[in-house]
Image (cartoon, rainbow, N blue to C red; front, side, top):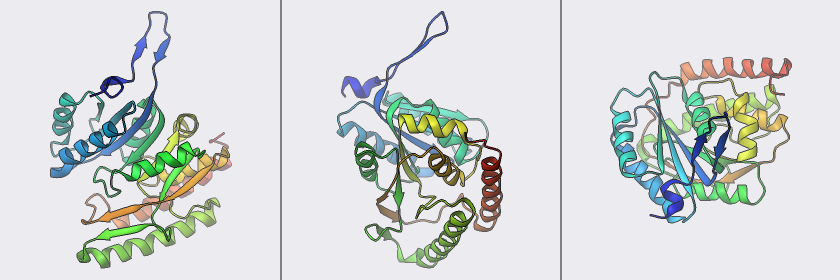
Length: 268
């Protein structure tokens, strides 16, 4: 293992109150809530991918109040890999909170967050990093791009169609309410330069799944360059943490909250 991947970040709290931060090249943030049997393998896959890139890195894993032993799994993996930084919430606070927590604790010049189930294969992280290196402030996966590809089990075709239809309706509402011209607001793979992350994440207020919309709206308000990236997407199981009816109601509430924050100039 290279020196960079062993631990390329150090935080020193000096006696006179100054924090010295030694930055690294890449931070990968993974929120986890009840990760299940695949958690160990997926974390090892993410770590191996970053190590193969031969650049300084960290994997920040935020356990958001899991009740299935995920915390113990993360701790066990971290004990064997010093580039994995575990964070823990005692109770479930929401995906938005977990991602914000991980990003703000990260040290990378480039920060990417992705879903624990690796529905976006880990090499798709590289596409996001390429877009950031090419000049984007924010790079986001676009599942509806003509260049994107889906790999899925036929057993979930009806479910995926329903999910896609609802996603298109929600995206239309976002365009109308927030005038946010993004094709795929809520893909679970997004990346940021350090500067963009430091501008966006301290201003976020939404704790749940709709946090993606808020962060993109804040990026727009700060005139950051947003690049949409075609990706490969794997769909072989139904997400256990999603309830369409409940989350649709919460999403409308969150959109109203973002709009109210905008009126009150909260994001400036």
